[in-house]
Amino acid sequence: MKTSAVTIRLDPQLKELLDDVCRHTGQSRSEVVRDALRRQLTLRLFEEAHRWTVPFAEAKGVDTDEDVFKLLS
Image 1 (tube, rainbow, N blue to C red):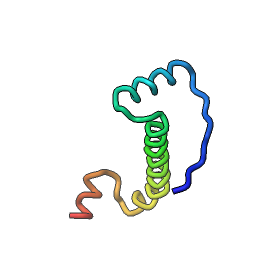
Image 2 (cartoon, rainbow, N blue to C red; image 1 turned 135 degrees about the horizontal axis):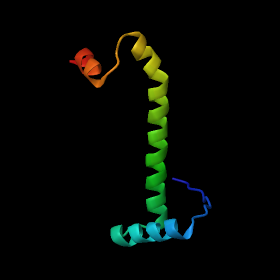
Image 3 (cartoon, one colour; image 1 turned 45 degrees about the horizontal axis):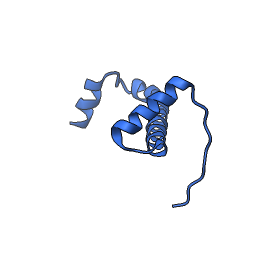
């Protein structure tokens, strides 16, 4: 898989935290940053999908997790 480089700027505290995680896990900075970015982007996509579907669910009377569970079980 072809990759490309992206440059980011970190404040000293965030860089130190990143380096601590790398030392603790044995992963490279790139691996940790890729994983964090992947998680953050996935979370954003989930949140966007949630915002988009809530009005449809509410229109059908689905307001809680329990309502969803009842529909699916």
